[in-house]
Length: 326
Image 1 (cartoon, one colour):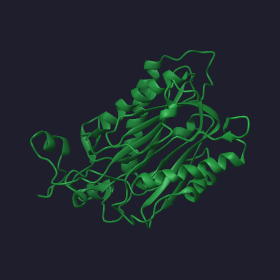
Image 2 (cartoon, helix red, strand yellow; image 1 turned 45 degrees about the vertical axis):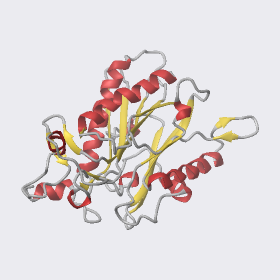
Image 3 (cartoon, rainbow, N blue to C red; image 1 turned 45 degrees about the horizontal axis):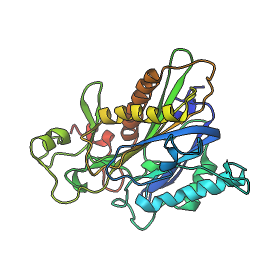
Image 4 (cartoon, one colour; image 1 turned 135 degrees about the horizontal axis):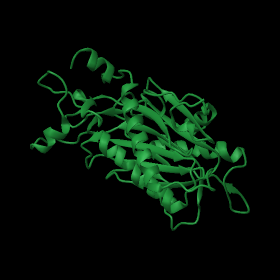
């Protein structure tokens, strides 16, 4: 049964560790079998692990899992737990004397909500793996989206709750493209189908949402540091792709992020990973078509991330704000 999420790509499972009290967590995308991996690091302030290995010029072709986490750079340690889980199951790149699980990772900054002293580590990454399943993907205040917030150009007092979302698309011929994203951007989240702001900076003068892109374009700029921000995402497909085209898929998918987040700033550390299960090797799938589908899946994942989120830590959710008519 289709889940309308990234697990519609066969061979993927998603697991979360969530700490609502500390407002942080991590999400793992586990590959039942190694998959070709790629990435596109677009943000000016990224926090990543193993992204250099995904360059098409590098040796290793496939990855075993991808980790998305909160906790800023501290949260990268959660990937160690994912590696332990995979090593226990005999997974990883064969170096003859040992198998080394390949687990690219990216983090977002959520230290300003909840407790800045509590971050996902190796044990939390391991627990996310134990939670992984191919069924329904929990969304909103879960995993890497637990402490995510959006619309922070005027500071935390006017920001809103972000979250984690997932979506998928099935193309003619059977190709499937899925996306999962943790949404923690400095700018607003916008529905590109109608131009409406779904969640973002609230207007300090009252009367609704500020409209961060227009405000910034007309000369507004935050006083001081507008926190730290990121959208981190994974897109995946069952189509056959080599490593170079897999990395290109991540770049094409990023166009969806650019459509749904406005503006993208120097304070964002956006990263999109890509996975190709290569289950349709006998039938070529046009990369442009896959890229367009991946971009749309990422748009929908971003929108669901904020629409599924509940208020937390003083940050109102999209649902609460809309219900109040603001």
